[in-house]
Image 1 (tube, helix red, strand yellow):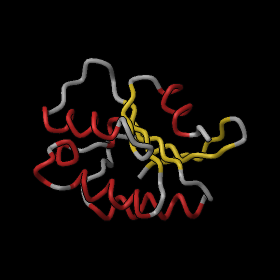
Image 2 (cartoon, rainbow, N blue to C red):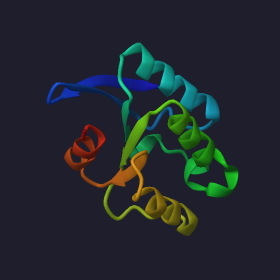
Image 3 (cartoon, one colour):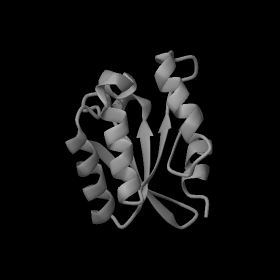
Image 4 (cartoon, rainbow, N blue to C red):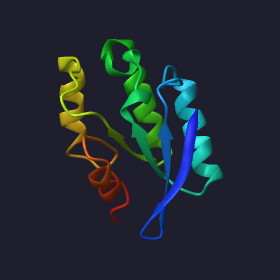
Length: 120
């Protein structure tokens, strides 16, 4: 999984990039959590390309399993997707529900995502 450790206003976050290694299984969440622990951060920025088809198809259970792992380990995650990208209705409903929480959100603007991710 391609990643970089970045900093913004003195706070570090993990930036997961590359569509060649999308989040395809629950183990990928564990790998991301391990990277967070290794780099002493609990904030993850996900490029939209790392969200596999199974992640956005809620019937697979992958999104729920990954996001629950993040909650269990106090990992805050933001995904940045291209504007106009279409997702299944159920996935859009899940994203809308998470918008009220402080665990996972989807953005079209990376700066906005980082700002939310690192907000106190």
